[in-house]
Image 1: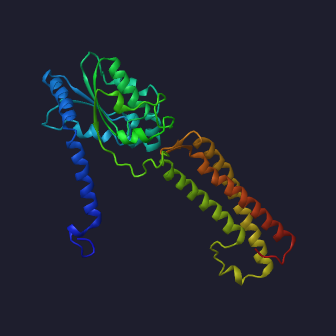
Image 2: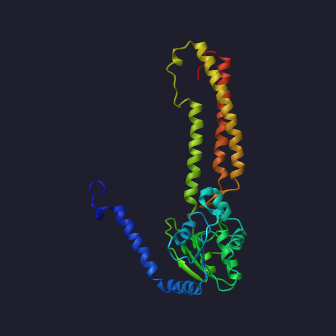
Length: 314
């Protein structure tokens, strides 16, 4: 029940249910491909050989964990749970690892994958475009393995070929694997008149950050920020003036730190693009430095007025 509504009247629940049914119907329409891939897996298991499964990316590791054998179960899976992309070490690290060319090949070596022709590997990744994905599928084919990809065609086709998240070759996992099982990833921001709209979420965050920091500087300049002045208003004018000078001097140290450290973060983040937009995240952090410079100018001006004219109060 939600606000007195029954489950059949719940709009959100019905939308979720209908969406799941729609995806399941699409999967059912591809049953022949699923059966063909299943036959390959069954053949390997019948030979008493393991089926290699890898999820080249942060959340894609969940697919590997799901098929990993359980106590008392059928232990036919070689689960490649590489710590490099595991989110336990942080999302940023995972993203950088999965985008590192050549890394996937070393993972195959570490897990003794493809030592003889005919081995099978399942590559599960939501998008199927990063370097680790493509390196693994290409290397597996070089080792004469049979490859099964569980990934998205719609996302891969919509993402620009020069996007930072892609393998340098710009290839797609679904096109390189022997068997492709579509996960039917839903993309809300699809192409409109030929223009890719993946940049909108990243651009919105960029605008929001700049708006917040520039607004902060503007509030400080006009003294429209929140003030705790109950006791200050009871002081003599001269005492109040020197207290204001002291406060602004302390704030001046904070502003300088904001500028310096903000610029340091800006330089580091210039090498990290938005995941949905091939644009450096450093430009968002530049707002911190710009805000600091503006506030520095405002602070110095306030100090000048306080020092030169004892009758001027900020």
